[in-house]
Image (cartoon, rainbow, N blue to C red):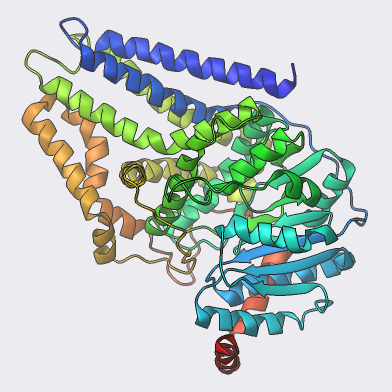
Amino acid sequence: MAPAHRIRVVALTVSGLISLGAGWLYMRFIGSDGTNFLDVLRTALFVMTGFWLVWGGTAGVLGALTRMPRQELDETPPEAMTAILMPIYNEDAAASFSRVAAMNRSLVALGIAEKFHFAILSDTNRDEVAAEELVWFAQLLKEPLAEGRVFYRRRERNIGKKAGNIEDFISRSGAAYEFALILDADSLMDGATIRTMVKRMEADKRLGLLQSVPEVIHAHSMFGRLMQFSAAYLSPYFARGTAQMQGEEGPYWGHNAIVRVQAFAASCGLPVLSGKPPAGGHILSHDYVEAALLSRAGWKVEVDPYLTGSYEEGPENLIEYAKRDRRWCQGNLQHRRLLDAPGLKFWSRFTFVQGIMAYMASPLWLTLLAASILSAALPGRYWWRDDETGIWVLAVAVAVVLLLPKLLILFRSTLSGRNRAFGGTLRAGLSVLTEILVSTLLAPIMLCFQTKAVTEILLGLDGGWPATNRSESRVSLSLAFAASWWVMVAGAAVIAIGICFARELVPWLLPVGLPAIFAPVLISWTSNSAREGRQPFLFVTPSESQTAPVITEQQRIYLSWTQHGPALAEGAATGVAHVHA
């Protein structure tokens, strides 16, 4: 049995035993006069949601407690031709194109630029944005060695969204390249990292896809900085555990990953699901499916948690995050129609189930909550038996499951001296604790947003693929209220019903109901940024304390370009005329 298979068996067994044991305790301590249907339902829901809760922390625990061998770096020039693809859709053109310029300069500085071509693949459907893209493409062509290596094309119809955009390039131009590095519009990668990924592909002829673990950069708000810190401090350990469990059937997150073009072209043609969206149509969460198809064809799909120099940007407030999460939810729920697809490996099917449960867990938790209120409200029924010890044991167990991975990572980082890059052990420790606190406060709000998303999808409402507003940060209280008033109502209703019909349950409802009631305040508060010129004390990351050259170069290019406002306006006007011609 391969090492990854053994680790999977152990992880699944441990998660199953813990959740079943917790379910036994839960059944033991609920009800008073025997067991009724509600007790069985609540226990089943508790075991089901508990399993995925435990499973979610398994990768973090495994990554913190074990080591993985590092791949040796190969700094020799690559031999194969690689296309670097950046799909864009109504983005800030200057920001996206400046990232291409910075990556190009990094490759030029290494003396390997001739082996890399950039292709900016536009699906933009707004003429004014398309006009800006033409202006900045002209500016981009002035970069070193850009002529004949940097290309731009715009599709008239964005069939298949991002996956269709990539497929269009692969089918038209893929034969000219051995590899393709797939980015997002906010992706940025160091030239040395790109070279390393190409050399890894050249060295392993069975490797079909290599995924890096991007670090979030340029966050300013509390919400954004919390995500940035989590991605830099916690994610590498979770990715390390994931890599050990998934082995050669690893994840693909749709960007900051390199693929073997021949393998991708032969294996990753996506089906168009029958029926209309949200259940049918083009698959939105295409990356999981493409990874499964590569594995089915015998190609290795791996993630390397040790690869540095891979960056992306994240949403700056919870509303923007929830908007993106809604699309992921719809895409993941589409995967239920692929579970019985022929030839897929067991782990690929399990990954689909895991992605589905990442969203279905929210309505299941709410169902458990509703069933508990109903049970406590029935005459002669109690929330727990006379001995309250069991329910406190369960509460502590749930807290341990949630906190253990992060605390282990903090302990491991303290011993290794890694905390120095995060402002020292004191600041890193306070940052971890604050991340836990803020995440706990926001969890009921996200639970409501995800439940709403699942409900809409099951009712047949299509959320589409909205453009990402990457510059949006501050959310006013009025805007936060407009987006989450119904969350307030739900939280108030839960507590009110508890007070009226199940008073003994109220202390357990407050951690869910109160954050929901204060949802607008929390959304607005976490969207605030630090005062101008003030260095935040918490959530320090290496990308801030020791900024990578490619990040500094991209910022310098962007500022240089955008300072020429009048030239942009004149160029954009010309671009609009060209677009309409």
